[in-house]
Length: 426
Image (cartoon, rainbow, N blue to C red; front, side, top):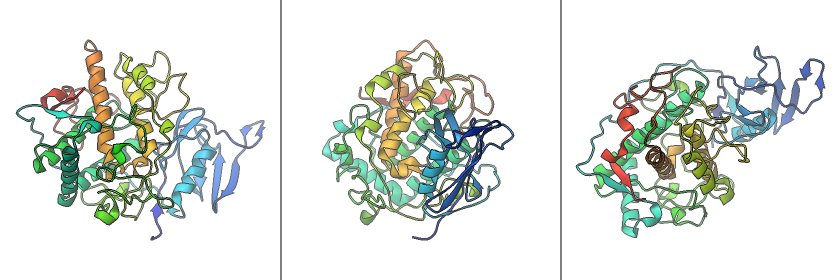
């Protein structure tokens, strides 16, 4: 494997560092340690009192969820209890790569997939993958492989990389379109429709299945069978070696987190530049997944979203952010860990699902299909409330009638009613 260049940076967010050093009269002292051959330094010398974390002199700025929950760009779906733990995990993810300086932020370019979405003559059915017949599974896999051969699949991965990179950089302020924002759900609904339309252009009988991770939690589930999505990654490099999406069976990654083609150059290396061309997974124990009880509590929330319209929405009573609880950045006091529901499935699968290029793993689409179903279930349960907020653009967050980037062809209002396209089996 070639040496990889990695850039770590994001807009700073957090409070005073939880340091393993004694606090003096001026607060916690700067802390430095050598870890796996790298130098980690945590200080308190930022203008706003945010812990200043560096690895070998390059800045690692963290997103702070609470006093005991920090997230770094290299661990997009994982949380650590202290800045030091986050820095150590980032070092482990670097695996010898060096850090690069901050590249300039540039404007988005045009869409990299055809923007048109045409509703079918009659709505089609999306099923739980466990209800699919052997033939339906085979046809789905064949269609996915064909989208890869035609280049559509990798174009969609590139879109997700571009948008996710931009959203993470601007998570506290500025334009956010698909993550850490109310438009998470309509944006991904449109994203899935683009993929589903590509599948159905190949085989009109194919629709997206969903993976209900509140009940289908066994690593031996048919989801991971050799004739469907394939199994866990092997020890060491975590390469998936079984099933149709193994490298030895022809599934090679063309878009890691080094975007190609029409994508924005500054996203190169924003999280990690990985020159491996094979899919990786690291399945966790079933306890990493959220439960039916957690889902039921979120479905009971009567408000779609609330200020500040980011990863902090709904973190305190009365928890008015169905979206942020579903996305996984908010939790109830009785919940033990951060990163539930949407986030927990990414963590459970691990490997590529941990990063912004997560659509490289086809399970991404089954996972987000279930997230979309949860939004549809919530809409039916709460018919008398706004199904999207804010109504007007607020602080860079799309309003109800804001065209969603990078396509600019549909607004959240256009995407509220999914039944023009599809319905779910239950």
